[in-house]
Length: 500
Image (tube, rainbow, N blue to C red):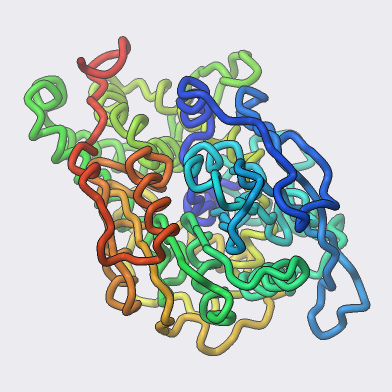
């Protein structure tokens, strides 16, 4: 049912939480949180836990009550959940950092254990704020699960998708017209005003870069600096180019394999293998037997082009998992056995169930993107095909869309320093999008991390650069020498792991 959603709507600005969690656990995570200054005196100590409890962080948590409808603030009221990692020094500078999560639909609070580690040096003297956007996490979440217990992400019947969403909408205590990026930015402004913060430093990841830019457009006087990691250009209808960008990223990865002597020797015809797989499962399915990664139970399933796309798309997000793709594509194409690709798809969809609030995803997409969906982009030959267009056409035909400003997709400039970050092999927000943003903003600098995928801030070098940028609010004299050592991970040549 939701294979269409994860193929296009789940634009998460996320890597595999399991991979990141294990990496950060190995590095060690600071978990002590002090109360900081008096600003957060009314908050309660809390523990944020992700990756099945394998990664935790202590913070200060609270809620802020706002009106759901900005024109009728005394009608339905909703609580916005947030967490703060206070400055470790206990003497926080007056301009905190706000992390804006991806999706749309990801909880910002659930990124705290990872981002606190990535921004550890910045957190020494600045508070880090994680406000769940309305419709996500602890902020009147618009989540949706199928009633019959089937996998939420890999069914393909659009009518069933609509019916399941309609049932969920009946259960939500929400008017989905007011769950847009513009209203989310207004909530952040309410938060800033409530805690009497003069200026914010914004960090947005993936869809969070749209939120950062909307806030910057509407409240520029309250923004000190902006970091955009995996940028969504202002003009872009989210998802309208996903098929093209994924295929380009995969072919770049295949080219990198061909330039590597060992990888090319093991997998000499990856482009042909990829084309063969797309053609084999174009309208066809293959019954296979797999073991569910969470339950450990074996079951039969049909391997389809949607399952193939699920596996390859989300493997392409992380530089570690990218290096598995040549092996898996070659194996499936030459042996006719796609079981390992199917297992990867199951792992991803199981994670998506917990990470993304589907209702918020559609509220944003049907309000902000579908009304101006571009015509004339033919993605039928791509791995993702026209699946996103099809699901938008179905769901947005009845979904109550919210109001969006007329200039929402019009480029603008602001007198605010901006650091733009891209991964060379990002399959959803490629470096070309970063170049678009660079041309739009007059005080911007664009850095591309070689061999990296979607979201690069968690790389220690990039995290250090972002820290120095926010401290200085200056892109001119930024030391980026450490980026010379960034590169791709080694390719997997067999099941034993990456090449030495």
